[in-house]
Structures are given as C-alpha cells and as structure tokens.
Length: 139
Image (cartoon, rainbow, N blue to C red):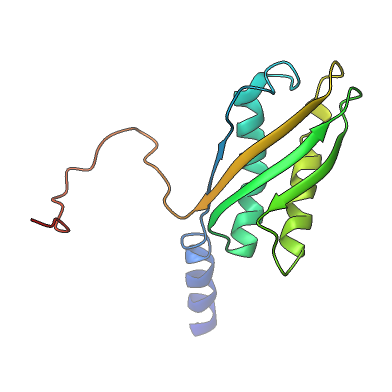
C-alpha cells in the first residue's frame, strides 16, 4: 500500500515543478514571408518544441539562436550563444529547430537571429492581475 501511495504521489507532482516557459524575441519580422504562417506561428511552434528541451535540461536564462534559411527552405549554420561546455543542450536545440524546418517557404535566403529566454515564471493565461498584497516593497 505504501508503494502505491508513493508512486501516485510522485506521478502527481512530477510535472508541477518542472515547467519551463520559453519566450522568443526577434528584432524584426524576417520570417513573415519565409515561414508558412508568419513570425507569430514560428515563435509558437519553436517555443512548444523547445519547452520539453528546457524541462529536460532544467535550463534558465537568455540565449541567442542564429541560423540561415536557404532558398530551398533548408536550415544551416545553426549557432547557440553563449557556447556551453556540454554540447548536448545545443544538439537538442538544433533538433528542435529542425522539427519546424518543414514549414519554411522556398523563396529567398534569410539570416535569422532570435533571442530565447528560458524561465520558470509562467505568466497567467487569463490575463488577470494578482490582487494579493505585495509585501516586498522598499520605502
């Protein structure tokens, strides 16, 4: 009985502490014409793909992802900055980017630079503000 309760407790709380929010920022909408669905769809697709990678590696912080899109719609020269000692995270990010490659249009060559922010601060989905008193004020 103890084993069953322990397993159920672990299964219930496994994902509650490992949620990673991925925010993607770019300076301009370079992918509006190069990606089927535009920049907003690309940001959403890549963020969903990177969310599991962020959870697996427990990554937090800011990164820059640079890559080229050829006229054939192929992705090349992928670089993740800052460079990390352990390359497995970079390999997984490249794999996640390759998953969205099928949606690139075959019309022109683009150089893309994206800002990636991995954080544990997941925003409210309903847009309501918290009305709890803020006790962390300095006067």
